[in-house]
Structure formats: C-alpha cells, structure tokens
Length: 142
Image (cartoon, rainbow, N blue to C red; front, side, top):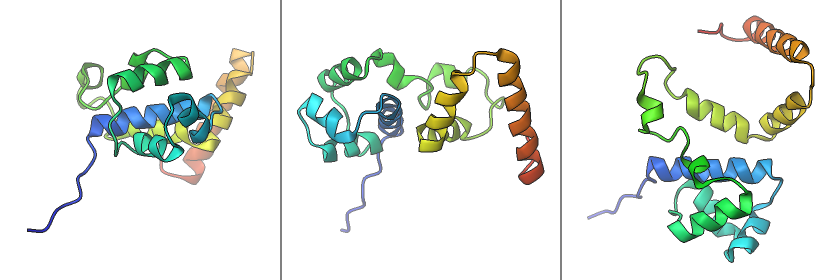
C-alpha cells in the first residue's frame, strides 16, 4: 500500500502564515526567532508552512517573542466564527490573498510607508490612485 503525503491542517497553515507575517513585520529572521525559541531555523520554516504543529508552550513563547497576543495567530482562521458570519459576502480566498500580500516584501514595505503618511486625505488619494491603476491594467474590482 503506497503512503500518501500528509497535507497540513488548514489551521496549522493559517497559524504558520500569521507567525511568518508577524516575524517579518518585526524584521526578525527565521534564525533569530529560532534562537529565541531554542529551535533551528528549519523548524521555524516548518511551523510557518504548517507542516509541523506548534505546541501550546511554544506558541506562548512565540507570542511573547513577537509581542502579540496568542489570539493574533488565529484571527480570520478557516472555519472561525468571524469568518463565517456573512457567507457569500466575501470573495473566496480573499483572506488568503490579503495574508499572502501582507506577508510579501512588497506588502510589508508598502504598508510601513503608507501608515507613516499622517494626512488621511493623502492616504485616501493614494488608495484612489492605486484603484484607478489597477482598473486600467487588470481586472475590474468586483
């Protein structure tokens, strides 16, 4: 009997992506986070991909190291009540799309620069400009 590769649990993948997001926002390498936790950077990679589950005590240490509450890692998790309050009102996979963007180097850089703009009217104009560029070069917003 051939063995199938085990697919990661969607919650583990989500929690791992949130660890990666917060780690990159904190400008911490996988190696530095691993050192703080007493594990290798390869173990951090496995946590971030969701291939290895994070135990409760390790989750507590990650939370402390990255200076966020444990609940941060479960926000918008698949199947969570906050995710299913309004079925059909959200594009399928849009939460993953946002997480992927915010976890990217460009997303982090754009977000950091954007929040440093003190004038709300200017921030609004930037959003309008980006929306216009996107509509001219890509698919229209739904």
